[in-house]
Amino acid sequence: MKNINLLITILLVLTGIFSVSADIKPGKQELIEKYSAQLKTTTSARDSLRILYYIFDLTDRRGQMKTAWDIYYTAGRAENVNAQLDMLRNLGSFYANNDTVVEYLLTLTDKITNEESKAATKTFIINQQINRKSRNPKDTQLQQLLLDSITKSHNLEGKDIYDKLSLLYQIIQYLGVDADGVLFKECLDTYGQLIEELPQSDYPLKNQYYTTAAMVHSRMNGDPKKAIAYDKKLLEMIDQLQQMYIKKNRKFRNYDTNKFISYRRMMGNYQALSSEEIQTIHDSIQALYERNPDVKSTMDKEGQAFAFYYMATKDYDRAIPAMIGLLKNNDMSAYQKQKYNSMLIEAAKAANDQNTYVEAMEQFIDYSNEIDSLRKITMRREIMLRDSIINAPLLYKESSQPVKHITNREHIKIEQTLTIVASALAILLIIYMILYIRLRQKQYAR
Image (cartoon, rainbow, N blue to C red):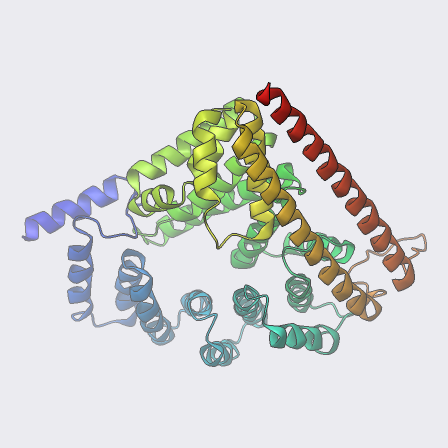
């Protein structure tokens, strides 16, 4: 038995350590049991910390939630502040829905003596909490708490970069990550500028922003080139982290799922990819599919990566059923449903599938109307905030020339004009599609 365990360990190291899956895999449970047994015989906190990290990287999410607390307290005895901060961030993600635990984590973070590390970690934990809560659009209490915090709990003219990041993140979440108004875009751009000023050690906040920006720009009317650029930043960050963890001897740390999410999102923006890029990304996804049970399970269950690849390669006969299956997922946002129905319209039109074309067009119009309603909500929220932060240097860079800011009244007029124009275009599009569909139906009837 000892020889088998030794052989498994050697094979894991020789195959590059990142092929280890977060799912149950032959030998994995044996490794966890092996390191758990070793843990009982260690005499120093430093050795215990190393073994606990092995267990943390090998186990599933539930096991990680328990092991994270053990690592935090063991890191305290080993006087390893970086490990403590690492686990506080992980715990902040695990317990983002639990206000009591989050408050306790913030109390523990306050004990860190390094002010910048403390501020960065608190910002990350609070951002995670707000992000998780913001997924429930009916949570009016959160919206009021965010509004109070935005207008009363931050120094709009201060120089604390972490306070600025916290404020901007709260504004973005208050407006809603599905928003696309003027203030939302200003805040997202300013957030990105500040993120690039952070030291490399603040990679959790960088990753948090790159993920949000990639999702926002991946929307139908977003900027697919920017979305792809942010996912490339995420993949570069993953490569850097892998190298860092190799040096720290965290030989079981795995980023396959993170890579897959970025590759899948990039494939969803296939309009901005070359044929070579499409094939390279597909090959990368296929490699992850074949080696990682978690990725394979997700792809088999959800089908997004397959559907996007079929669309990218104009394989419409396979794209149509794949997109129809994808759209059965009720957890997707209106922006996702709008974009995916647009893809289905493209595929159905190319394949001359009239029934699918009409159904997809009807769904596209429904979700477009839902997004118009979201824009009205965003507009009202922007108006409520603009008076409070209109002249704050947070959003506007210093310039030698005076800058004329848009007043609330002007802002309202602009938004109303844009809404009227958008509605008129939507009506014209609907009329055109109805006439087009009827004409085609008559042609078929003959």
